[in-house]
Amino acid sequence: MKKILLIIPAYNEQYNILDTVTSITKSKLKNKVDYIVINDGSKDKTGLICDENNINHIDLIHNLGIGGAVQTGYKYAVNNDYDIAVQFDGDGQHDINYVEKIIDPIIKGKCNMCIGSRFILPNKEGFKSSKSRRVGIKVISAFIKIFTKNKIYDPTSGFRAVDKKVMLEFINEYPTEYPEPISTVMLLKMKYEISEVPVMMHHRKEGESSIHTWKSVYYMINVLLSILITSIRRY
Image 1 (spheres, one colour):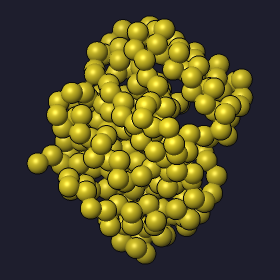
Image 2 (cartoon, helix red, strand yellow; image 1 turned 60 degrees about the horizontal axis):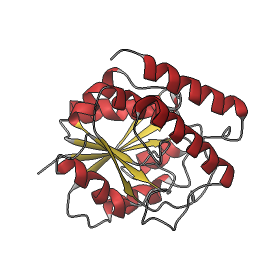
Image 3 (cartoon, rainbow, N blue to C red; image 1 turned 90 degrees about the vertical axis):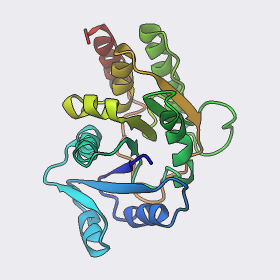
Image 4 (cartoon, rainbow, N blue to C red; image 1 turned 180 degrees about the horizontal axis):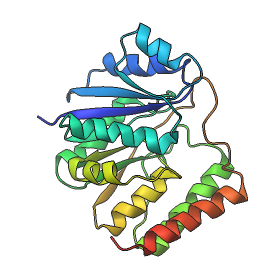
């Protein structure tokens, strides 16, 4: 039986984190999953709520950003000998019922990372973000295809699972800026196998997204430049 860990990065998620964890603990998945909340230096009551409700968590003294928080989760997974780690947002957007669908290709040895995608068939429903953000995702996807020869439909999805080999890569190097698309390019250049499975996502229940610059030309330029630099590195 594979040991599976959900890594839940959380920054100022006082209105969402308890519901997110409750959805996990009350789920009826055929595969047993554990979880760890990475409280990323939250300035609200996220840490207090975790303490009061005996939620398994790590408190980071400073805000490291999504990349640093998730890498902390990977280090925890490796140190505790987990076979599969699943990134699972603390804001209520990810549905626990899709976890088994995401980990299944890894359990069967078909890939090293599996991405839960909003944009591949037969997933025609559910939350897919704003039109401008979808356009940005398509541009990033096209750029990744140019430099890696691989089509990734949802490169910014934070709902994804990795095996132990990838965890060992990520504990040594994990991007702090734009971690999902950049780490995907890293793995593709290292010749790891990546799959996508269709999932439905939800609007975040409360609070604001940590991403505020999707409409910014500056943001897109930096993402694309980061993909370019990552793709020409030697691995």
